[in-house]
Image (cartoon, rainbow, N blue to C red):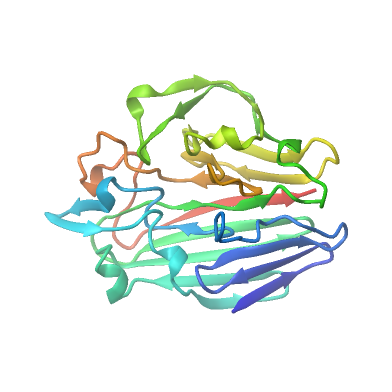
Length: 291
Protein backbone atom coordinates (compact mmCIF):
# COMPACT_ATOMS: atom_id res chain seq x y z
CA UNK A 1 0.00 0.00 0.00
CA UNK A 2 1.28 3.47 -0.90
CA UNK A 3 0.78 6.63 1.11
CA UNK A 4 0.49 9.83 -0.95
CA UNK A 5 1.85 13.25 0.06
CA UNK A 6 0.92 16.29 -1.97
CA UNK A 7 1.39 20.04 -2.05
CA UNK A 8 0.94 22.63 -4.81
CA UNK A 9 4.07 21.46 -6.65
CA UNK A 10 4.85 17.86 -5.75
CA UNK A 11 3.13 14.52 -5.36
CA UNK A 12 5.14 11.84 -3.53
CA UNK A 13 4.24 8.18 -3.09
CA UNK A 14 5.77 6.16 -0.24
CA UNK A 15 5.22 2.44 0.16
CA UNK A 16 4.66 0.98 3.62
CA UNK A 17 6.88 -1.89 2.43
CA UNK A 18 10.34 -0.65 3.29
CA UNK A 19 8.98 2.90 3.82
CA UNK A 20 10.34 3.41 0.31
CA UNK A 21 9.80 6.55 -1.73
CA UNK A 22 8.50 5.20 -5.05
CA UNK A 23 7.49 8.39 -6.87
CA UNK A 24 8.30 12.10 -6.79
CA UNK A 25 6.21 13.84 -9.43
CA UNK A 26 6.27 17.53 -10.26
CA UNK A 27 2.72 18.58 -11.11
CA UNK A 28 3.83 21.85 -12.69
CA UNK A 29 6.21 20.42 -15.31
CA UNK A 30 4.85 16.86 -15.52
CA UNK A 31 8.18 15.20 -14.66
CA UNK A 32 8.65 12.00 -12.64
CA UNK A 33 12.05 12.17 -10.94
CA UNK A 34 12.29 8.76 -9.26
CA UNK A 35 13.39 5.69 -11.23
CA UNK A 36 10.35 3.47 -11.64
CA UNK A 37 12.12 0.22 -10.82
CA UNK A 38 12.27 -1.87 -13.99
CA UNK A 39 13.31 -5.31 -12.61
CA UNK A 40 15.20 -6.05 -15.82
CA UNK A 41 17.78 -3.56 -14.54
CA UNK A 42 17.13 -2.77 -10.85
CA UNK A 43 13.74 -3.27 -9.29
CA UNK A 44 13.93 -0.76 -6.45
CA UNK A 45 13.34 2.99 -6.21
CA UNK A 46 14.78 4.49 -3.02
CA UNK A 47 15.46 1.81 -0.39
CA UNK A 48 16.39 2.57 3.20
CA UNK A 49 19.64 0.90 4.26
CA UNK A 50 19.62 -0.45 7.84
CA UNK A 51 21.22 -1.90 9.95
CA UNK A 52 24.11 -2.06 7.48
CA UNK A 53 25.14 -0.18 4.36
CA UNK A 54 26.66 -2.22 1.56
CA UNK A 55 27.89 -5.75 1.97
CA UNK A 56 29.52 -7.66 4.81
CA UNK A 57 32.42 -9.94 3.99
CA UNK A 58 30.82 -13.35 3.36
CA UNK A 59 27.53 -11.73 4.46
CA UNK A 60 28.45 -12.45 8.09
CA UNK A 61 29.60 -10.60 11.19
CA UNK A 62 30.55 -11.45 14.75
CA UNK A 63 29.12 -9.89 17.89
CA UNK A 64 29.69 -11.11 21.45
CA UNK A 65 31.20 -14.37 20.20
CA UNK A 66 28.21 -15.21 18.02
CA UNK A 67 28.08 -15.17 14.24
CA UNK A 68 25.15 -13.60 12.38
CA UNK A 69 24.20 -13.33 8.73
CA UNK A 70 22.95 -10.19 7.00
CA UNK A 71 22.49 -9.69 3.29
CA UNK A 72 23.56 -6.54 1.44
CA UNK A 73 22.11 -3.28 2.84
CA UNK A 74 20.29 -5.03 5.69
CA UNK A 75 16.64 -5.92 6.18
CA UNK A 76 14.72 -2.66 6.63
CA UNK A 77 14.11 -2.28 2.90
CA UNK A 78 12.31 -5.66 2.83
CA UNK A 79 10.03 -5.23 5.86
CA UNK A 80 6.68 -3.52 6.33
CA UNK A 81 6.72 -0.32 8.39
CA UNK A 82 3.85 1.05 10.45
CA UNK A 83 2.46 4.49 9.60
CA UNK A 84 2.29 6.46 12.87
CA UNK A 85 1.46 9.91 11.48
CA UNK A 86 0.10 11.21 8.19
CA UNK A 87 -1.03 14.61 6.93
CA UNK A 88 -1.29 16.01 3.41
CA UNK A 89 2.42 16.86 3.33
CA UNK A 90 4.14 14.70 5.95
CA UNK A 91 4.22 11.05 6.98
CA UNK A 92 6.06 9.08 9.66
CA UNK A 93 6.90 5.37 9.43
CA UNK A 94 8.18 3.12 12.21
CA UNK A 95 9.99 -0.22 12.32
CA UNK A 96 10.56 -2.09 15.59
CA UNK A 97 12.86 -4.99 16.41
CA UNK A 98 11.16 -8.39 16.31
CA UNK A 99 12.07 -12.04 16.71
CA UNK A 100 12.69 -12.05 12.95
CA UNK A 101 15.17 -9.16 13.07
CA UNK A 102 16.89 -10.39 16.25
CA UNK A 103 17.82 -13.64 14.51
CA UNK A 104 19.97 -11.49 12.20
CA UNK A 105 20.68 -8.46 14.35
CA UNK A 106 20.53 -8.95 18.14
CA UNK A 107 19.53 -5.44 19.20
CA UNK A 108 16.34 -3.79 20.45
CA UNK A 109 15.91 -0.90 18.04
CA UNK A 110 13.30 1.47 16.69
CA UNK A 111 13.75 3.12 13.30
CA UNK A 112 11.55 6.14 12.62
CA UNK A 113 11.42 7.76 9.16
CA UNK A 114 9.63 11.04 8.45
CA UNK A 115 9.07 12.48 4.98
CA UNK A 116 7.97 16.10 4.50
CA UNK A 117 7.09 18.05 1.36
CA UNK A 118 7.95 21.77 1.20
CA UNK A 119 7.47 23.60 -2.09
CA UNK A 120 9.67 21.70 -4.60
CA UNK A 121 11.59 19.68 -2.00
CA UNK A 122 11.16 16.55 0.06
CA UNK A 123 13.05 16.22 3.34
CA UNK A 124 14.02 12.96 5.00
CA UNK A 125 14.36 12.67 8.76
CA UNK A 126 15.64 9.31 10.04
CA UNK A 127 15.90 8.59 13.79
CA UNK A 128 17.50 5.47 15.25
CA UNK A 129 16.65 4.48 18.82
CA UNK A 130 18.55 2.02 21.00
CA UNK A 131 15.79 0.58 23.19
CA UNK A 132 18.11 -1.78 25.03
CA UNK A 133 20.52 -1.40 27.93
CA UNK A 134 23.74 -2.13 26.03
CA UNK A 135 25.56 -0.29 23.25
CA UNK A 136 24.03 -0.80 19.81
CA UNK A 137 26.10 -0.80 16.61
CA UNK A 138 24.53 -0.12 13.23
CA UNK A 139 24.75 1.45 9.82
CA UNK A 140 22.23 3.71 8.09
CA UNK A 141 21.95 5.09 4.61
CA UNK A 142 19.68 6.13 1.76
CA UNK A 143 19.69 4.83 -1.83
CA UNK A 144 17.46 7.08 -4.00
CA UNK A 145 17.55 6.35 -7.73
CA UNK A 146 16.81 9.21 -10.11
CA UNK A 147 15.53 8.82 -13.63
CA UNK A 148 17.69 9.88 -16.57
CA UNK A 149 14.57 9.92 -18.75
CA UNK A 150 13.02 13.04 -17.27
CA UNK A 151 11.85 13.93 -20.78
CA UNK A 152 11.15 11.31 -23.47
CA UNK A 153 14.03 12.27 -25.78
CA UNK A 154 16.70 12.29 -23.06
CA UNK A 155 19.88 10.31 -23.62
CA UNK A 156 21.81 8.87 -20.68
CA UNK A 157 24.86 10.89 -21.68
CA UNK A 158 22.87 14.14 -21.53
CA UNK A 159 23.33 14.07 -17.74
CA UNK A 160 26.12 15.01 -15.37
CA UNK A 161 26.68 14.80 -11.61
CA UNK A 162 27.95 17.94 -9.89
CA UNK A 163 29.49 17.85 -6.40
CA UNK A 164 29.79 20.96 -4.25
CA UNK A 165 31.69 22.42 -2.60
CA UNK A 166 34.66 21.70 -4.82
CA UNK A 167 37.27 20.13 -2.56
CA UNK A 168 39.53 17.10 -2.34
CA UNK A 169 37.71 13.95 -1.16
CA UNK A 170 38.93 10.40 -0.52
CA UNK A 171 37.68 8.02 -3.22
CA UNK A 172 37.58 4.41 -2.02
CA UNK A 173 37.50 1.66 -4.66
CA UNK A 174 35.44 -1.49 -4.28
CA UNK A 175 37.01 -4.92 -4.47
CA UNK A 176 34.55 -7.83 -4.63
CA UNK A 177 31.83 -5.55 -3.16
CA UNK A 178 34.11 -4.56 -0.25
CA UNK A 179 36.01 -1.32 0.30
CA UNK A 180 39.72 -1.41 -0.47
CA UNK A 181 41.34 1.08 1.90
CA UNK A 182 44.79 0.18 0.62
CA UNK A 183 44.13 1.72 -2.79
CA UNK A 184 42.28 4.95 -2.08
CA UNK A 185 42.88 8.08 -4.11
CA UNK A 186 42.31 11.78 -3.55
CA UNK A 187 39.73 13.13 -5.95
CA UNK A 188 39.00 16.80 -6.53
CA UNK A 189 36.63 16.01 -9.40
CA UNK A 190 33.45 18.04 -9.01
CA UNK A 191 31.85 17.33 -12.40
CA UNK A 192 31.15 13.79 -13.59
CA UNK A 193 29.68 13.27 -17.07
CA UNK A 194 27.23 10.36 -16.83
CA UNK A 195 28.03 7.29 -18.90
CA UNK A 196 27.32 3.63 -18.25
CA UNK A 197 31.09 3.00 -18.21
CA UNK A 198 31.37 5.32 -15.22
CA UNK A 199 30.01 2.42 -13.14
CA UNK A 200 32.05 -0.42 -14.65
CA UNK A 201 33.91 -0.87 -11.34
CA UNK A 202 30.71 -0.56 -9.25
CA UNK A 203 29.79 2.50 -7.19
CA UNK A 204 31.94 5.57 -6.75
CA UNK A 205 32.40 5.83 -2.98
CA UNK A 206 33.55 9.11 -1.43
CA UNK A 207 34.46 9.46 2.24
CA UNK A 208 32.96 12.77 3.40
CA UNK A 209 34.21 13.00 6.99
CA UNK A 210 30.78 14.38 7.96
CA UNK A 211 31.30 17.51 5.86
CA UNK A 212 28.35 19.08 3.98
CA UNK A 213 27.71 17.96 0.42
CA UNK A 214 25.40 19.14 -2.35
CA UNK A 215 25.10 16.61 -5.19
CA UNK A 216 23.18 17.52 -8.34
CA UNK A 217 22.11 15.29 -11.22
CA UNK A 218 21.39 17.63 -14.11
CA UNK A 219 20.40 17.27 -17.75
CA UNK A 220 22.81 19.49 -19.67
CA UNK A 221 20.35 20.16 -22.53
CA UNK A 222 17.06 21.13 -20.91
CA UNK A 223 18.41 21.81 -17.40
CA UNK A 224 16.00 19.71 -15.31
CA UNK A 225 17.29 17.53 -12.51
CA UNK A 226 17.60 17.00 -8.77
CA UNK A 227 19.82 18.24 -5.97
CA UNK A 228 20.48 16.19 -2.84
CA UNK A 229 21.87 18.04 0.17
CA UNK A 230 23.26 16.43 3.31
CA UNK A 231 25.13 18.06 6.19
CA UNK A 232 26.94 15.28 8.00
CA UNK A 233 27.11 11.99 6.08
CA UNK A 234 30.20 9.87 6.55
CA UNK A 235 30.26 8.74 2.93
CA UNK A 236 28.49 9.19 -0.38
CA UNK A 237 27.85 6.70 -3.15
CA UNK A 238 27.08 7.29 -6.82
CA UNK A 239 25.85 4.16 -8.57
CA UNK A 240 24.01 2.66 -11.49
CA UNK A 241 23.82 -0.89 -12.78
CA UNK A 242 26.55 -2.24 -15.09
CA UNK A 243 26.88 -3.87 -17.62
CA UNK A 244 23.07 -3.64 -17.76
CA UNK A 245 22.15 -0.14 -18.90
CA UNK A 246 19.37 1.13 -16.67
CA UNK A 247 18.26 4.71 -17.20
CA UNK A 248 18.96 5.96 -13.67
CA UNK A 249 21.66 7.26 -11.34
CA UNK A 250 21.65 6.81 -7.55
CA UNK A 251 22.89 9.57 -5.24
CA UNK A 252 23.37 7.96 -1.83
CA UNK A 253 24.13 9.62 1.53
CA UNK A 254 25.56 7.08 3.99
CA UNK A 255 26.34 7.17 7.70
CA UNK A 256 28.19 3.86 7.43
CA UNK A 257 29.84 1.84 4.66
CA UNK A 258 30.41 -1.70 3.43
CA UNK A 259 33.02 -3.87 5.10
CA UNK A 260 36.59 -3.12 4.21
CA UNK A 261 38.38 -5.95 2.44
CA UNK A 262 40.71 -6.38 5.42
CA UNK A 263 37.88 -6.60 8.00
CA UNK A 264 38.17 -8.70 11.15
CA UNK A 265 34.44 -9.42 10.96
CA UNK A 266 33.83 -8.03 14.45
CA UNK A 267 30.78 -5.79 14.19
CA UNK A 268 31.79 -3.26 16.83
CA UNK A 269 35.09 -2.69 15.01
CA UNK A 270 33.51 -2.26 11.57
CA UNK A 271 34.91 0.70 9.61
CA UNK A 272 32.79 3.85 10.16
CA UNK A 273 30.20 1.97 12.24
CA UNK A 274 27.65 4.00 14.20
CA UNK A 275 27.11 3.41 17.94
CA UNK A 276 24.41 4.31 20.42
CA UNK A 277 24.60 3.62 24.12
CA UNK A 278 21.59 2.15 25.85
CA UNK A 279 18.36 4.16 25.58
CA UNK A 280 19.91 6.79 23.32
CA UNK A 281 18.81 7.99 19.90
CA UNK A 282 20.35 9.81 16.94
CA UNK A 283 18.82 11.84 14.15
CA UNK A 284 19.88 11.98 10.47
CA UNK A 285 18.58 14.30 7.76
CA UNK A 286 18.91 15.06 4.07
CA UNK A 287 16.75 16.66 1.39
CA UNK A 288 15.99 16.36 -2.31
CA UNK A 289 15.02 19.37 -4.39
CA UNK A 290 13.71 19.01 -7.96
CA UNK A 291 13.96 21.54 -10.75
